[in-house]
Length: 164
Image 1 (cartoon, helix red, strand yellow):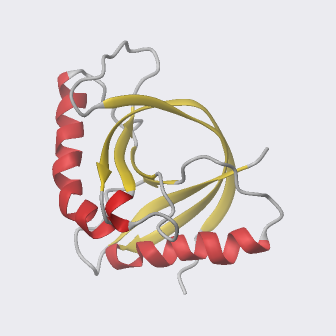
Image 2 (cartoon, one colour; image 1 turned 120 degrees about the horizontal axis):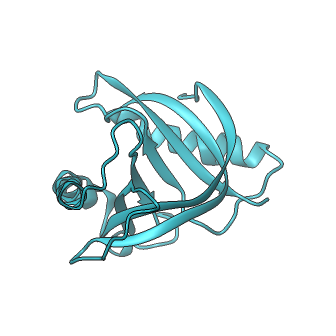
Image 3 (tube, one colour; image 1 turned 90 degrees about the vertical axis):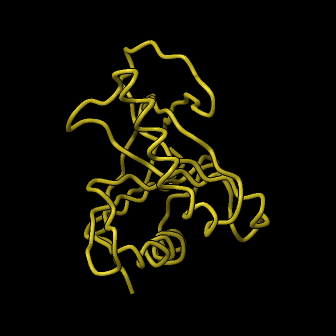
């Protein structure tokens, strides 16, 4: 079983993001995600939104795969942007904010271990922890670039929204 290197509680206040949303199965999303990230990075570069060592990249999961049909799952690629930069939505690029309290699992995982890390967060941690889940979207934050193969590992934080 995959376990986190550590667990923390974090409060995010108006973390400004840009994102592109995909609708469809997770396998279809994985096939499109690289293209979507390239599109997101191109927009961010063109609009001078990338801050070295500060900008973070995320994948946001809007729906529960045990409730929502595969063809209707909404998944978004996103990145943090400076809060003080005026920006206009354009094409598929949307602006939003993330706020609230989160339980964060800090993982060092390979590409094939993401599902196991999410399973740990929801089945091991959530059911054994006194905090209750909050109605907000969970997401992965990539501390280091995700591994491109099944051998290498990367640092990924999984954020689960919890009540105050």
